[in-house]
Image 1: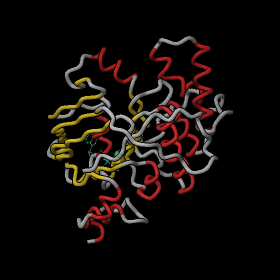
Image 2: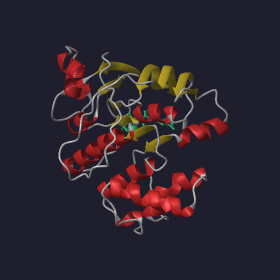
Image 3: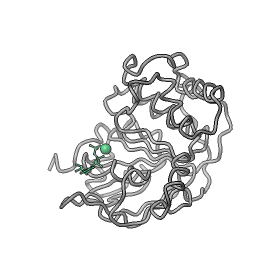
Length: 282
Ligand SMILES: Nc1ncnc2c1ncn2[C@@H]1O[C@H](COP(=O)(O)OP(=O)(O)OP(=O)(O)O)[C@@H](O)[C@H]1O
Ligand SMILES: [Mg+2]
C-alpha cells in the first residue's frame, strides 16, 4: 500500500461546479481519522465482512469498490455507528466507537457526514428543511444562523434557489447535490458517500465527484466514497480499497492497480465499466 493521498488545507473560496478542472492540492501526512481492525459481520449463515482492516488519514479521499452485495454499505453503516459488527474494532476521530455510550456516539455523529445510497431526503420537508435537519438536531444554532448556513451549503452545490422546493420537484442529480449539502451542514471532519452517483448520467456523475473533491479540498475533510463508477470517481480519489469475499482484496493507488498482475484488480480498474463482477466474465 502506498500513502500518497494527503493534502494541505486549501484556503480558497468555494469554486463553482462550472469552473474548470478541480485542484490537486499538495499532500501531507495526516492523522488517522478512521481505524478499523478485524471487522466481521454475518447475516445468519451469510458471511459479509470477514476481517476488514482499514485506515484513513486526514485529508484523504478513499474510494471503496467491489461487486454488488459484497458488503460496502454494511461496512460504511458500521463505521457510522448505524449497525453493530459481530467482531472487530472501529475508531472514529480517535474515539472507540463500539465502546462509546449513546451520548459520545451522538457527538461523534455530529462530526461525521453521511450521504446515503438512496437520496434519503425527507419528502415531507422542503429542501431547506432537509439541509438544515442535522444542524437543527444538534440544537446549538439559532434559526437565522441555520438559514444562512443552509443558503451557503446550497450555493456550494450550485443550487442557490431551491430551498423552498419539495424534494419531488427536483431531478435525481439535484437530489444528490441536496444530499451533499445536507451532509456538509455541520462541517463534518469525516464524510461517507455511499454510491453518490447511482442512477445518474455520466456528465452529472462527473459533476458530483468533482463537487466531492472541491468540498473536501475546501474544508480539508476526509472522505470515503463508495461507487461502481470507477471512470468517474478517478479524479476524486487518492487511493482505493477493493472489497471481495469479506476482505480487502486490494488496497492502493490507481497506479498500483495498473501495475497489478491480479486479474480481478485489473478488471475493476480497467476503463469502461467498474461495476461488473469479475465472475460475470469468467
Ligand atoms: N439488515 C440486513 N439484514 C440482512 N442482510 C443484510 C442486511 N444489510 C445487508 N445485508 C446483506 O449483506 C450483504 C451486503 O450488502 P450491502 O448492502 O453492504 O452490499 P453492497 O456492497 O453495498 O452492494 P451494492 O453495490 O449493491 O450497494 C448483502 O447480501 C445483503 O443482502
Ligand atoms: Mg451498497
